Length: 96
Image (cartoon, rainbow, N blue to C red; front, side):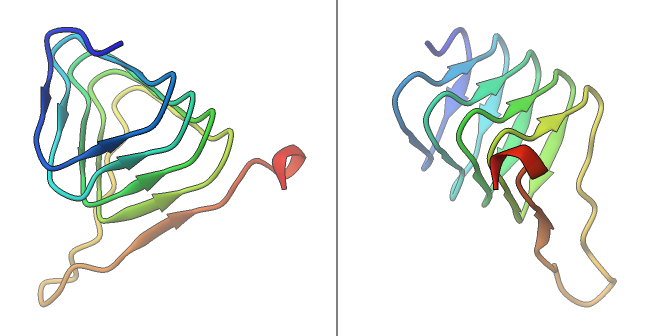
């Protein structure tokens, strides 16, 4: 279910929940059973199945594994002043 949110150039698999007021930008790919809280934003990132992302968070240019809990207010910051680098967060150990 997508509630009062913007989805542009993103892919959503089954059983994705998001919003309200979330923003999925170009290149966002959410695997099944993903949850995105209020005011979350994702750009050019792949988020694993059963991953939960709290409200007021931004994930950009990242790959997030299965069953990861991204806390509220989390930001991936991966610009070194010259180029953007990919942030990688692996699956929870019990999910591997």
